[in-house]
Image (cartoon, rainbow, N blue to C red):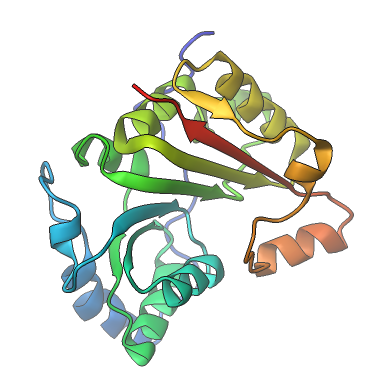
Length: 230
């Protein structure tokens, strides 16, 4: 399969929506710099958190943060890295973190594909890519986050046996992702029956986006793949 990764194309759309309120601007100006991943190569992910963590997980494009916040609350001994370039969503997420005093989180507000190579090999326990922008038009498809190249970046960053989850309500993108997982030498797709990928993940928190998709008649798919032993 050809490499459909284009390093010159951003995988996300707009960076900002409505004007931020004063409190939201303060989150971006003061809290984000404190939690943002450092520049350059990162030697030890666990050292980035103020308390000892048992593992580190990554969520790419957390949107409003409903799913990520839920996972952070239920697993305080897990460190999380959240990636979200959309400033408005980031500001709301940071406000909740500050209000609840959550500390098991670090943030990246840029392109995840440029951040992944800086992580130590085998340092992630899991990666979640939930409802990424489908870029549905044929000429846009090179902007889809899932590609042979990004799956290779996932495989490098994940430990052996680490999992990758992908959820989408766009059948074409689900098929696109399955095709690339099937051709990957690094991943095994673990779903055996249709119910396995039609049922939400354990402890799943439905996001506002997913609720709208279901109301519109679209059926979500929840794929799971595991990093093969290297």
